[in-house]
Amino acid sequence: MPYVPALSADPKPSGRLTTRLRAVLLCAVVLAAFLALSFLAPLPFTKEMPGATADALNSYQGQQVLTIAGAPVRQTSGSLRVVTISATGPADSLTLGQAVSGWLDPNVAVVPRQAVYPPGNPSAATQQMTQSQDSATMAALGYLHLSPDQVKVTVNLGDIGGPSGGQMLSLAIIDKLAGNGKGGDLTGGHNIAGTGTIANDGTVGAVGGVALKTHAAARDGATVFLVPRGECSDAKVNPPAGLRLVPVNTLTDSLNALNALNSGGPLPSC
Image (cartoon, rainbow, N blue to C red; front, side, top):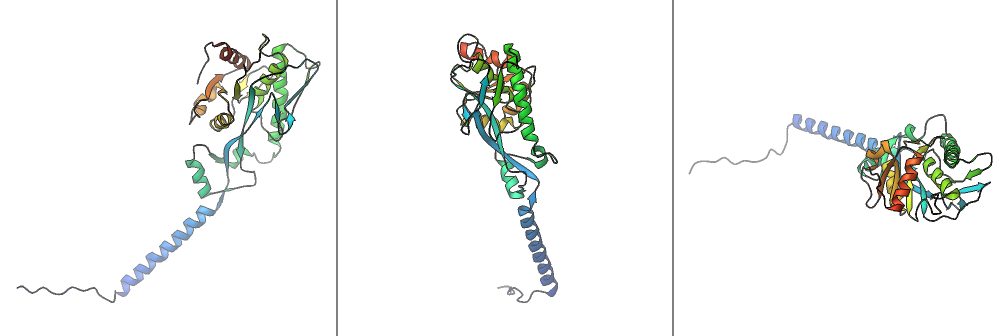
């Protein structure tokens, strides 16, 4: 039988190997500490989520959204919802872990803080909402050929800021004053939501966060969502089931779409 030498581990590793192992372990500890600190360090990002909706035909936070003087006001049915986005506060930061979690969640948007809260103008959202309310009133009264000197509209949307409620406010003013022009409601009793700025001439402008707003609308029972035409592609990102996306460019487009919805006519779609 051939001789086979016995094999055994060296109980005493060389000093060189021990030094190398210690160096590797030290690097691993430093790297782990660095990663842990990076994961917890505050980052200048804001997390956005679907926010509240406010029915412009009714009340919000205990206050009537529209108060109109100088002209008869109709009783209405259905809803015309202003849709919002909820965001972390201007003084809040996200950790890397929170940011990664948000990026992986289709119902959350993580954006640079300055995109939501421009530096140096903390009251910008309030100013934009005030301007939006004025433009919504001018657009609605202009469509109805009514004078702003005779008809006064007051809007109360509580803590909602920004300009994106303009389109829905204009539609609600028209519904309150004239309905569909044939004795019926603009909504036809439906739960309608939408977004978009409004200019005095009735032009509907683009806004941000449409993909999140569609989920807020669907959550609160809306079945139709009026969206600025240029943002159809954004609205179709992870769309909620059962919500019909209707593109518009102007206030007249929106009114025509609602009339088509209620009469069974063809309705544009994103």
